[in-house]
Length: 278
Image 1: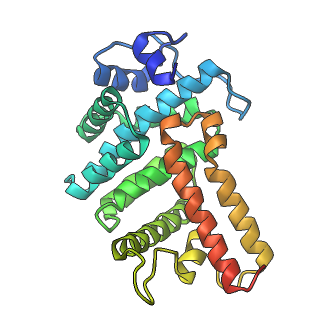
Image 2: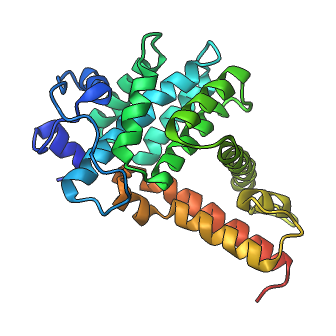
């Protein structure tokens, strides 16, 4: 049985509790207010099945609720931001009941009294120092902020605050932001290629441009081959779907991580090809 099936069926050996439990309980129409708040150990030790399912629940809850907060940060929720949340749900191929819960979480995050600070504090505790998991969470939030094509100052201020609470520096935020911008450009190029259907001479079928490839890997054009390989391997490790699931990423979000690793590989191959690597 999946983590969601166990949660809805009441088969979990814990109740999530805390602000995350309250938010999820409101979305599901249940009360989880008597549970434990946060897992005890801060280190990245292996997770047992029950702990992993708990982290998966926390990740799902925080992701969609905070998406609502980020979408509302500039004073209005645009159609593009709603579409981004719907795209995340579609990529997860959510069952109807999960989709309804995600929508309710998103709506709660938009509310003026949403306890963002408390939710983030518990989310960080539940992740137990798993920075790759928190990084993917931040990437999803930044994608939401860029859904309308630009990062509004109010959204940027909110995201800076989120990074501060989750232990990510401004330098790390800037690195993630560059990655998200590069991904947006690459995906736009890929969409153009698919619409063109790859027909005719000179039609770009959606491969990243060379400049996009360097941007996506976060390296400069004059970087050495060794530096590029290190950047590639680091990004691939940070987004490896199986590794992320073992750390507590909901299985339904594997498609998001898989898409990112696909883009990272394409960028690396584009650079290798341009440099004449065999």
